[in-house]
Image 1 (cartoon, rainbow, N blue to C red):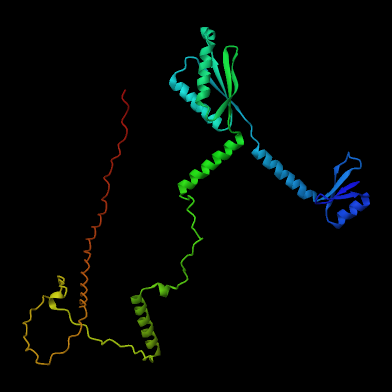
Image 2: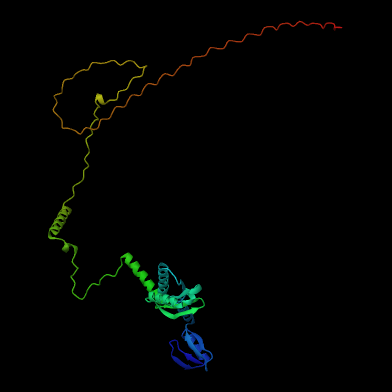
Length: 324
């Protein structure tokens, strides 16, 4: 058998036993490539890797494979201008996507005697789509119809790639990710290695130095013991008479006796330093006396019913003689 190395080098004609030994030593597979050749050709390769690469290539080929579709557009000989522009717009979209367009004119009645009018209409249509398509088959009569085929200038794959690029460009423009201008690095650039302190102004640097010196001096001073100062305790001031709540005595309490007010002479004691007055605390209101509970008046006992008297006697009468 003829043996081919893993890199495509020609080893020569060897025995099967030697080829198998080389495959085991190189940790590869011995694959028969051309069984009909004289002698048969075998190759040393990693068969699993070969199958994987073949599957990837087939997948890529299917992805790039394009199926051209023949789109059909029908006209009438007396088509209106607006309808004609609509048909042209459809044809431009089909040709831009890489599909072929089949333009067909349908003749009715005596219109079949005027084929030149159909030719002029198809030529006008071909001129309108000349930017994206070219005539592949000239107008020809097929029964009652006249047919012309227009092919795209770009194939399906190119049209898809261009559409994908346009979509990406529109998305980048919407996000504002347009490519910026490149910076020219051929010239010498300023050094940006200075520190933050060097970039500050002189006034700010002086203030920073003063703050640092003050903090260093405070760190060297001995720390004084911290003594907690207790606030003086003052008796709560009595609330003035006007601020005391007035409560009405219950009806059962004794009437209040008015006492004459006694005026006291003003004290001549020296004035004391003002002390922050504490907020007056209103005196607690006295609890009202509980109202007496009503006493239940006993109801008079019912009079005993009298004993029933003797029943009146009933006089018994004897039956009289029967009337004759």
